[in-house]
View 1 (tube, rainbow, N blue to C red):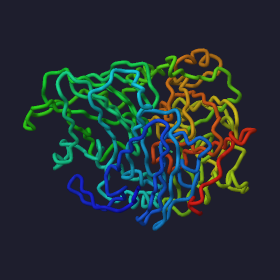
View 2 (view 1 turned 180 degrees about the vertical axis):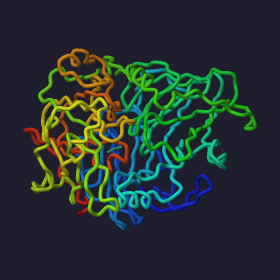
View 3 (view 1 turned 30 degrees about the horizontal axis):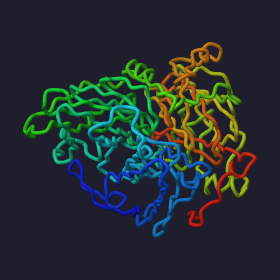
View 4 (view 1 turned 90 degrees about the vertical axis):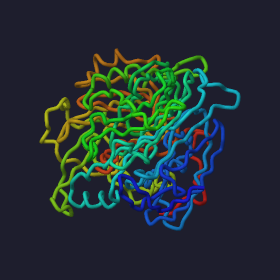
Length: 528
Ligand code: C2O
């Protein structure tokens, strides 16, 4: 039961009403086992419209349970309920759930832990204990008010006041000692940390003072284990690490700091939590970890290059070797006229120069019931004009076309994104595809070279994930099988950029048989 309700919560000496699930912040963790059927009855008691997304649950043929508002469903209105009904199939590991409407995921989010089938061990040493570490953000004022005002002005909203770990900013922020997450460890034991980046607008480096981490899973897919001092995790992603409590028994900070994001926090301090050895008194001052500096692209590239699918006989990496269709998308940020904005202009973001406009009814409904005119089907497979996206501002390209873009497909796709700089240059973009996992076969800085770069693709054990950071001034190539019929959202997981239109959808057509077709919608699907 998810009761969406408003509750007063205080952080950084500021109390404010926030939207919560069951009065909890962060929301409840969901523990399921591979193969389980999950029913979550969401009842909305808040004044905001609501929809909940089960980030990366595959929802095979069952987009009705996916959750992004106006993509797969209309919102659950105040006083109404909707039951998300899905079965966890062939997935195990750490995922999460979050509100997928407005900026409500600022406070409406939580962990999903999928345990492997009974009797199936992890493909890594069994940890003594495990903990969820959820990175988030906190604003002192009401987030929806801030965003509405910023949109009216046509400006970006103010950044958050603090980052959080499990909803808490940690003791480096004023009067936040009691809002500090702490985990106790026993010397010699190994712990599994399930790290989730639920922040709205910041990619993060995360490290633990004195301890190294062994990465064993990303986005609920096992990886070849490797040891590192810090991890990079972008909004939407999850990373499981093993940590051995083998250092001199003291108190150590775990900390996170943004990587390459424009809107850091107002108060640019790292968020911290505490790893505390058993029996060490709270009066002992913890030690801070060394985190890569915020523009350490070299660390980021090298870290990402170490991520490889486990690709074992039990968990093979089924990388598509042949592709049926090649898509090439450019990510753009630009400025469009906005007659209703105070400045007369607004910031917009685009894929192949098309800025997504939210439809009035769900795209999945429009597709299923054959309602025409809801989305355009002429989304370009490649950029309209050749250009250089390595940093030169393209003033000629500042205006984007507005439209609800979609691409229809039933095939194996290779998608390249590259990032062209229009007005900002500092960010990388965490791209998220609903409905599928994809293989990140290549990535690089500079212009993508269709002649040379594909020869360097990893088609053996590339990382398999659901969100990938596309580097600033660079490119990323992914491959996936479009074998899940329905309508699937693809967007930048920086909420700011989603708001600006950095999104589109894939319409995956039904296959020949009934088993390859979208299931009928549930009776309680919220009406538009
Ligand atoms: Cu966390 Cu649209 O995804």
